[in-house]
Length: 287
Image 1 (tube, rainbow, N blue to C red):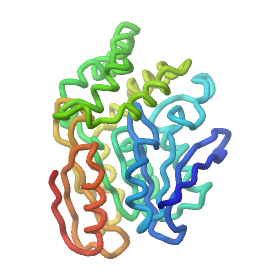
Image 2 (image 1 turned 180 degrees about the horizontal axis):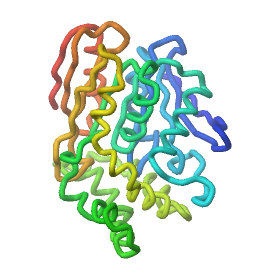
Image 3 (image 1 turned 180 degrees about the vertical axis):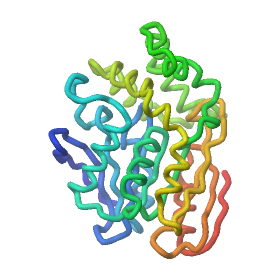
Image 4 (image 1 turned 45 degrees about the horizontal axis):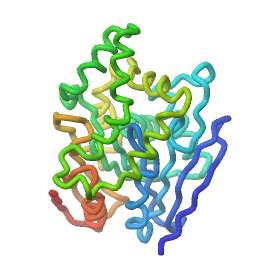
């Protein structure tokens, strides 16, 4: 059985909770979760990776078991979230690592790659949008708030925080919803129901600076070393959690060319398969 440690560490006054598994001398892999979840979304994936990787999965500030500082003391923008996770990697001693980014993990992880390209060995992007074209019609209320941050437009975004929306993100497109455990979305809804959590999430949904940087993919590609190429581009989908376009690029020096795989976000074995194929050959995995 895989041993997973559940740790907390102070990072510039913010306590960050994280899961850790695998040998400390194995290739490091940083898992960055999405909205509205936390590192518990990786609870089934971590054991499948821990025999080959040193896996670290933090809860972003304001999410899960990590601190949720008051908004008067911490501005909830992706620049600041990324800054906290950047410092987190330094505090725990990660100097070279791959990043697996999902949803909100993308604007966080891509910023790490831009700030410290020499530290990044690979990027696995699962529904990690970096292009305006990847924003579906479901994003219209959010884009309206970016353009006009009125109270009315902010209030309209509360539908994204409802328990029903969380359940929908887990079950949309699933033929047999009885196969979806309620544990994940119930825990997500518990975290969303905490006092102040709604305003934190609305701040992030309305991060106008992040909105102006949706073409971060190009910035990442320019910043990374020539032998590490970001290959993923998120397709327009009905909902930004409903499908993924993912890419795995070089882990250390073993992979000679870019790899691509497409998978539904809930099907972690496909991600495992793609990581296994990083042993040195090109692969295409479609689920």
